[in-house]
Image (cartoon, rainbow, N blue to C red; front, side, top):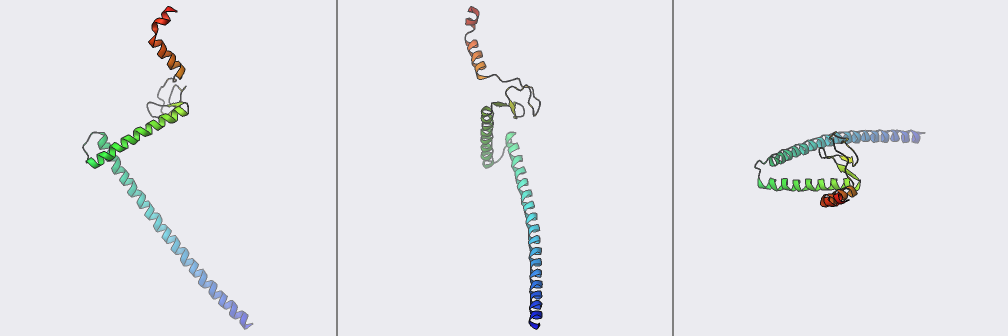
Length: 147
């Protein structure tokens, strides 16, 4: 019986130490996680501030204000990328059989009379056949009069 009491006593002490260690590790984990969350939040704030600085510089460039040459190169690169983004949007519209709103740039069906995003009036777009027919009529108006 003494061995059983000693066994359970040792087991109880081991379980107690293990529980204390798990508790300390859990506290450590929670504390570290809180610090990491705070760090991530601060990093996001720094990133937003840097983005705002960049937007202000780009705005000054867009308004024709003088900025350092190194920043001007970056702004020109941004303009080129924006132009390419616009071309990609146009290609997507073409593939989807749609078009872009001239006012807000939203994708709208070819047959739509208004943009569903901003409400800008926009008559239905002509098909390629209709455009080709109109172009031919403009080139040969005399043929219509003869018929």
